[in-house]
Length: 241
Picture 1 (tube, rainbow, N blue to C red):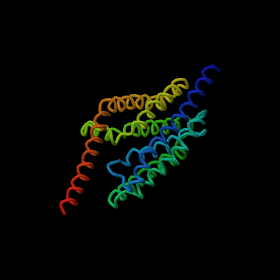
Picture 2 (picture 1 turned 30 degrees about the vertical axis):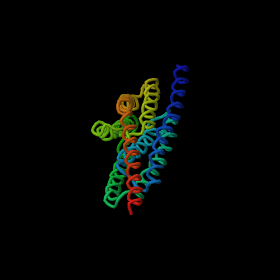
Picture 3 (picture 1 turned 90 degrees about the vertical axis):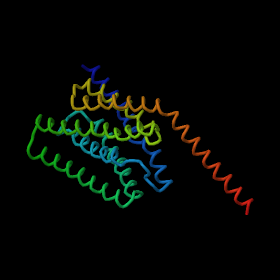
Picture 4 (picture 1 turned 60 degrees about the horizontal axis):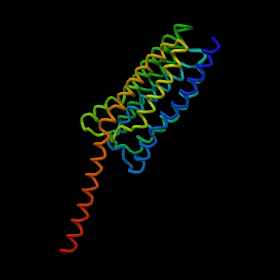
């Protein structure tokens, strides 16, 4: 029994480490957004859903809802801060139409979380409270892991992985695998089920990246050729004039 707790704690720590990498993985994308001062074709939906998931996860892991989940509380609290920052960047650099959509998404997110917190505290106790919050956590976590599906469809359609960051996909796979083992050792189905789904989706994303990564290089070569041709044309025009 003691060995199981030690292993569970170890995988919980690994889950925190890889979870931090997962939350930090989009920084490469956001450096590009800040540099270009445009969100381009990147979607804010994965980050809005991740914010909701972090809020619900933090609530589920609190001692009066689900005891012995301090490591989950730590990483979800960090996730709230980082995901809120990402959404704020989207608000700053997106178009007016997109800003209105993001504000609408945020209203829905905070409404759902507020309702969950109030109902779980006022109407439920003990195992019933854990059941309600655990179910909400599982659903939101599956939504978070499933949110890149739209990006995966874009990859298949365009045959390019330009808008699917590989570090994010790799972090999803490693993080969800760590938490799956953590949940299996702790016999927590609410954490286990969504993270198994996350493991499968992370693996699919990496498979897509492996299939279409060469196309990305070809696209970059074509862009470089276009730039060179444009410069040659400009030089020819100057010489002709």
